[in-house]
Image (cartoon, rainbow, N blue to C red; front, side, top):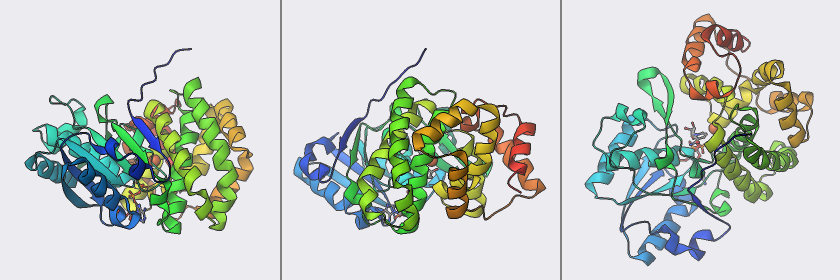
Length: 362
Ligand code: NAP
Ligand code: FE
């Protein structure tokens, strides 16, 4: 048995967490806040963060308006604004999009580089410290080093991240997710589940990541009926915990082929991230059953569901609404063949094998 585990993020969890731990936000003297169009305000997290910063005597500036599936160019512009403000730390507030953007902003603010340089993952001047406040329960971005951005040059999404881009503090208050609309709750909750499921399948899975994933999958299995019935108010706290645990595990195992298959559905068809993955999951399960049946069974048994029950749940709630033609299959397979997520799966992932898999979505 061999593994490495490194998680340099301090985790503060609970309702009222920021009011009770205001001093944790003072990672410097000048904060640059990065948030979405409305998520910061609607969730109440932006107001609480400003109050905490004022209590600590820190100066701040706010960049409001990070788009969903943030574009590299917008993150670069925000990074330039942070440098102009002479920020010495970043506060990221929102779903995965603003949180991922805050990591890019923290890198651009500290380093004079071109937008594309970020994917080299080496930062001469380091990366500004990040205080992350999630307002969705899905990506776990508050405890991962990963930042996923829309990269038009390659007509897909592309990630960067290294040990420097782990947030310094993750402040999780489930009350910030009370305002989430049902459709976003359904999609983001699936993302949290998918991370735990894929992390079990990943060739980098360890007993340590399994421990988190098996616990989180068990809890998720008990909430699936409520999620399906739209009774989501009572699952907010546990979903935030599941999402965070999934973040800690994918920080070590990465995601797998399911995420790589979901990206083109988001990029070309605008399907929300967690839903896109759920739509391709039945095909993913078929492939994993062929190559890694023991790991698939381990994930299913932690979830408390049979293969058929999970497949039926997915098809009932997240039916595949777009089908690739031959040209799409060719392009999507080519793109997936170079995605880190694909390579983590531990199955044959040359372009020809991937074409066969994508053709199953037709
Ligand atoms: P999101 O794109 O951050 O947000 C989805 C929508 O929900 C937005 O319209 C957002 O509004 C709204 N919203 C967020 N919080 C809200 C709240 N509390 N109340 C009401 N509305 C709220 O969604 P996400 O699923 O959390 O993040 C998806 C992104 O994360 C994708 O780009 C994906 O690739 C990435 N991702 C990253 C990781 C990682 O490890 N870093 C893992 C998986 C996925 P605003 O527009 O106002 O913000
Ligand atoms: Fe994800």
